[in-house]
Image (tube, rainbow, N blue to C red; front, side, top):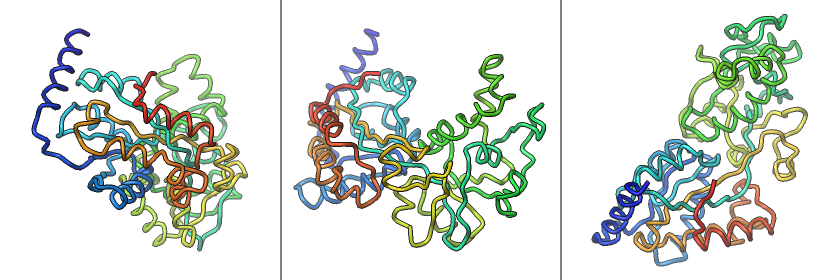
Length: 343
């Protein structure tokens, strides 16, 4: 631990003493948070004397990997995430000298299963989604686990369309994929007795079955570009896509969201928690870069202003589901004080 702290101290001194070669904030991370961060960055660039930050959509996992790789102008200052940072990632940060990180929760989002407006709207259970997308599923009689045999939605339930299962979704590096796995697939697992029994007898196998997504073409990894999924859904009315609510909100003239358990993905349903596939969104600040890379605190101030993330703010217009006023105030105070993350 002393060695790690010593390395971190040396890196911080070297970074602070270096000629200021980078005068622009660098942000990486979640494709879901990307449009919100971009809106803030553009407003920040227009209304301050600082350059507009450079933002890359790398996925939550990819962004945290870059963010935690070290201190210095070659490493990002901020990373966006559509899930909370993991303990293992905090430890990796610390190993590389990134010892103080501030967590900023920015609001809520729903994960939608969306398709073209020119097709029918589905009302699905989490169990039906699991049977459509999982690699291993229970047999019809429920007595064994088998490779997923379903090729059409109607094979899962006769009330569903007799069309090929084709779902475009995020890769494993995506926070959306992590959240979808946790909130849909893993919860559905508990409802199948043969899988639920594994939780008691073989936890590793239980996790593998619940998180395993089929690889036979029914689920297509579509990268971190959610706009590309939107375009593909327009072109193929039988296909579905998995992405954050904001992309559905921005493309409501072309796409619709499936109901999950009878609840449609709407701003109100995600806000009040009744839509069952909702999650929190975050960004993380590398405290060691504050005061060396110009504008970081001013960017945080812009993002946490009510005109941005408030109930009437410009991010709500882009699909962000705001926190209530009291939670926003608590998060804002922690962010502006650069309160270090505690797990």
